[in-house]
Structures are given as C-alpha cells and as structure tokens.
Image (cartoon, rainbow, N blue to C red; front, side):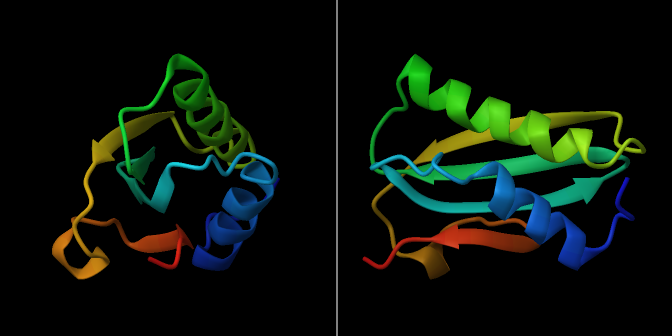
Length: 98
C-alpha cells in the first residue's frame, strides 16, 4: 500500500499505462478529489470500446494501489486544440508531442 502523494500517484499511473498508450492519446492527467480518482483523457478521435477499456482498466489499477480511494471517474475529451487551450487536471501523466 502506497501513501497518496503526488510522486506515488505519478508512479502508479505510469506503471498502469505501460503498453496502454493508444495511437489517439494526446494527453492524460489526473487528480484526487474527495477520495475519488479523476482521470481526464484527451484524444484525437472518439475512443473505441477497446480504447475506453484500456483507460478504465488503468484507472482501476491506479485506484487499487491506494485503498483509501473510494472510486474513480474517467472522462474522455476529443479535441485537436493545443495543450494550453485544454482543461487538464493537477497531475500531467502523459503528453504527446504535436
């Protein structure tokens, strides 16, 4: 069991995303609000069911590293706007060079 620090969240997220970065993924950020893991996924195109499953599974893996978390919420956003024009959460986990 890891303590819920910024560093541990980033490590957990990077481990959970190993072999889970899809071609359409642009940015992924996360934060914890009221014991809920919030994950924001920015994509180039609408995610397929398989792509959604990848990110739902990754969120579940992260949550399982921190038993104090009560759940997770994954949100998908499709856009080609630059990073600085997009909403993102506290911790940036992945950013693709555009």
